[in-house]
Length: 527
Image 1 (cartoon, one colour):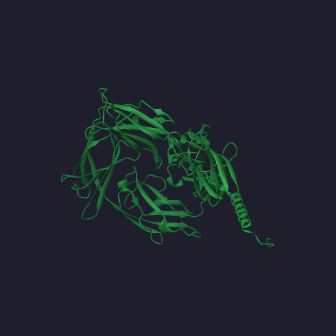
Image 2: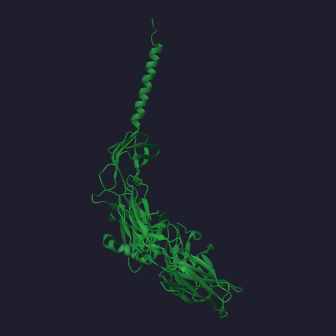
Image 3: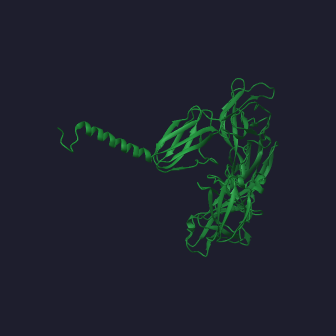
């Protein structure tokens, strides 16, 4: 006979099992899941067996089925991002725009998120053949592929990959992202020949661009070598203080920003007679800079130079004494927040831009005063980063407006006076699609209206948050045009040629000092 209220061993096991089952059901009811599809970007075509990764409070990996469908279960509540990859495709992420990390999914206990779509962009291929001027294949020669990007609003080419031709003179660039490319071949004997760009030119500005769609094997990018003879550049360096040649002066040839055919920076030392020479130069735009430190001070000279197909001789560089520039940074009606003047960054950029003569402001004294040594007289652009909670209201060099580039710097004009204000305007932008749905990770760009588009300090850019909103602060008062793009290269909006087709798509907005404005934007999808 069993005593009342006492569980026998078998009953204890059953009760324990039931308790565990209840706990498991409770835990399962608190977990969440994500279901969706992996498709080829811009289509409803599934990508079978794609590998899906969930990253957040937990990390999980699953493979989609033959229909591109996937499901991840038993996820703890929290924020997650979903990405996917597959052979022949670039890695994609749910809600990704403008190369961002993708849209976050915020899971609550027991939630099932269904129907999310991850689009994968198919990789592309460029292939072709390199032949000599007689049509014969050129084996074992280097081929480069270059892509466009932007730097300070200038469209430039950067190296995206290299390959070597086989015995048939053929080359292939696999696994490329869609976009515009330029292809060139670099001769083995680079001292005697120049790079040749598709289809057959030594001038990069006349090269043909390959506009590569997604998932395409773009064949027939054939390059025929042409005889492009390098040129030489020579001249003399003179010292304006003595009127005599400047032996041992350092002479630097700098490719103008935005070109690729000009190659890397070259540097030589002037002879005892002040003579210098650069050999094996490709066509393009350059800046030539000479400098010398003598017993008194440092002298320098800079000139732009355009190289074509003919040699350039008798360049005269006259070294001028460098000057000391003084100035002061002030804050208008300084209150809270207090601007930390030591964190304000100021650059003087020689125009045309010459890296060798870039001046970066040294540390600023607590009262805002500063001294800059070794400034070569010439034309400059002033770039001021006032930091957070401030904007540059004005800048004057003597009586010259230093915010209207280029402005001329020379001795005896006065000091550089920079005024910072903490009373800028604010813009709250909401980006929506045609269905009035908020668009996260869109790029919102504020562009000054003419004639102030040469003012790099007036541009601003922000990405939208998960609610499709962007908050732009510390804006200088004035008239602007504001845009929202789904995908845009960084700094492209400073290029007049890029922005021109989109002018009518931006919204005009006036920003007032100390005021907040709200604006609703429609997303611009680039073709």
